[in-house]
Image (cartoon, rainbow, N blue to C red):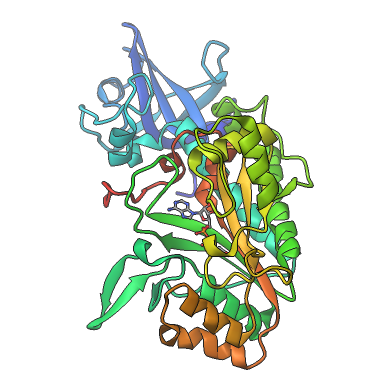
Length: 434
Ligand code: AMO
């Protein structure tokens, strides 16, 4: 549509053709207003009854809400119009009529629960405050890509149909691959490691991960977007530096580019990029901090994972993004390297938002024999992973990396109370469509 003008760009003194959805028809008797909405905003179209062609008048005043219309007419300044401009009608076409009964009210006058909204996402995202989340998500993905490139990383994509899991056997989705058992990938973990040792050195991937999480929680999805980094000749502190840069770059880009969307979400005043130099607590220090809060029924001891309550108590105490480093080896997967000093202690780290975990990472075990031993210790069959371990016999440099949950990044950034708000079509225990 070459001659179409966005509503936000309709200039007083010109004749414009706009196209969009009917937000509302306000019939005041002698005069009616059709409010038309497009991706950029809204415009008021005035219908002076008796002044225009009768057929056009009927079309414009009887059109149902959310129908798609195309209107051509002169644009004029009008102080009383919501956006300060108004159109009158030369031509009015109903391009796609909407049924009068809507399953969801995009004007937001009638509230709907999340489930109804997700069932009717196409209507839901016509609400500017819902679309604002996805505009911000889009900025985040762009900023993350740009920052990785600045950090000399190559973007890769790895298979989503895989032969083995990596993040613990219980959370795999099995599928049938030409009569053979296969799985949806839980993480690009092994592939990104193979690529970093494949001469690229520094790689990143933004792609889907699949987790058969049994529980429906406000912070878990069954299909999520993982932002992954892997760097050859990197150790855990190097990977933490990259994670911090990526998270900060995402916030800075949103602060710079999404003022209007932040306004829509009521966040414009308080939104700020996190301070740099996120505190780095060792696991041991983290336990001490949590136990000192007195918030937990039972004191945590070495070897415990942090429960949701523990994460929250610690987050409240720290009050900003922070790392937890040097996790016990036994709570981290086989590919995480132990520290040189203590085989009980790993190089694994997490990056936490005060509300929840955003990132896991660490230095990897790059020594072939130690890697194979690690499989056996975790009760995994090294033979199944041979496609991966054999490459460690041909010059695998020390390397480190991390995985950052894209949805959790957006959710915590925008203080949303459910991760599903950040996904157009979420997959969870109850939801396989749309
Ligand atoms: P991990 O399993 O901790 O680590 O996942 C990394 C990050 O991905 C996000 N995430 C999820 N988000 C929503 N729903 C889920 N079900 C879900 N599962 C994970 C979280 C989490 O911190 N291979 C390692 C990373 C690495 O070491 O490089 C991994 O996958 O934000």
